[in-house]
Image (cartoon, rainbow, N blue to C red; front, side):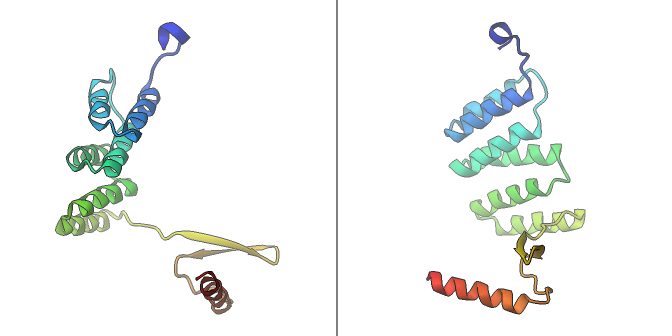
Length: 151
């Protein structure tokens, strides 16, 4: 790239290449590329590898990627969730529970999904399972009606 386009390669270029390799299932090649990078790898490249490992069920390499991610970003919730998902696929339920306890101990928790709806020109936000809105009974009745009409 430097000779042809006068562009200095960086981690973002390697990240794109790792992601492309992983999308096609070339996980070992992606791992070797990460190890051969001329600079320190970052969470983006390890995250791409972990996603590929989850997709193509390469548990051994996925565990290595997850461990590297946790070293690089020990407070990032998504890394623990991905690690937990990988462990769950392997079938190590006790380890999943240990990871979730670790998240609680570190104060890292999952946040509920937020939905919003506009009614009467006003935007109303709801957390998953939230029933605090004054019209929540009507809202959930409408949703239930919609579900039954779809089925």
